Length: 411
Ligand code: ADP
Ligand code: ASP
Ligand code: MG
Figure (cartoon, rainbow, N blue to C red):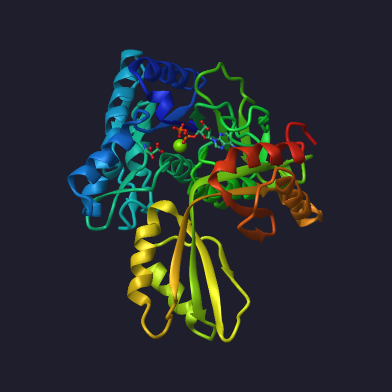
């Protein structure tokens, strides 16, 4: 029997009624002859509440217990989804991560999937079970502890199951009807894309578009999973939503495919560090050891053997970065001051067309200049340009760039 993976995000399982609606959609695929693996998120808001409880109980929490708590939201929806399907006379049962077992690394709250054995679930399909409901976002480490895959991790659970079971497709049901040229909540002119290339989706996700977790796109690309994003609220045809696919499968596309943003960025400047070999290595090793995710890095020109070093990191890692720098500021780094600007956001334009077209950066900077928006840091790669700007201009920048690159119009 062909296997289909269907993932339902938080808003799609937010109430018993919505679980029923999702279950009906699963029933339709079963009726078409599929064995279905359903991956569920926690009810929307639940994971945030659980994270809050952990922080209130223990500010410097034990990461293993954090995972034990925050993974629990998915256990509830998995059981409820299986019960709902049974009420509809669809043979179904639930699996928590450890029961599969979905094996992961021991990096609590950011674990990576290592293995998904298929025998257990396949045996149940062979016995006539039609739907395996699996709790997303969670797994088990070699030490036998519960792990989680990072926020938004149910997307990754879904793609990993699709790869392991060689599923016909992996459908990600969410609260928007596909991947848009930018977040439709920020720009009313955002346009739904019928197709987007893996590379573009990967960049958009890692630059802040949370419609798919970055790791899920990486896995889909590596294992050639047919990945589709679609709405759980609207009636869907077979070609609804957005297909994330290989570049070759896209006939025409704009030079810029989309605009992404990340609200919670901080710009950190180490003022007056010595300009000699080994300094950057010392600074960024200390930040890495402290678990700070550094993104952009800029080093100024040096004057009299000293220079300023600027980097960006998520705002919730500023305290950790400050502590690491204070500790490392012995004779080697010897900076004068660390200035943290926590009111910045990152806005990026992404598109594989940039490989062969010039002028995208010029157009982007001109557009921001026309809006009176000052650029603080710039980074580029082959298919993206990112800038740090004052957070208060973030929405304006996204909308202006969307207009400037005419993303509301198809190529
Ligand atoms: P789920 O709970 O189903 O996993 P998420 O909230 O994680 O849903 O992801 C869906 C949200 O992603 C949308 O509501 C939308 O606001 C946001 N989003 C950001 N960028 C984009 C984009 N380019 N296209 C579509 N949605 C986007
Ligand atoms: N419930 C988890 C979260 O909110 C995982 C997910 O929904 O993908 O991050
Ligand atoms: Mg999500």
